[in-house]
Length: 154
Image (cartoon, rainbow, N blue to C red; front, side):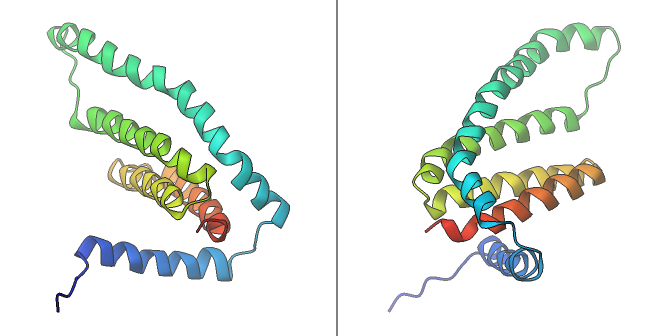
């Protein structure tokens, strides 16, 4: 018999999920049912619209960055790895959100998980860039809402 073992990352995410479920669902005040239903019903559409609105900004940052970087470097500007890391993380989050939309519309757990991973990526980036307020507000509010509506996805 072949046994499948989980990777360390998968085990860690499962443990984090358990802790977050405990604190953000069982111990936190619940959102009203009508608010949850609204978020589940219209959240994917809102995500799609916001993603479409942000896409040109990210593409512009990549395009302008490519065009202006040589000129800026000749003028003495220094671009740190943090700038590019931020752009890459934002791009990956955007892709995850777009890929999650069909699953969210069908109320599938896979769509919820992709949104969860995008939120975690944003939080990790906030931590490594020392953006404590972004971490607390973005992760705290984002994960609270996600866990409040998690039961709507199967």
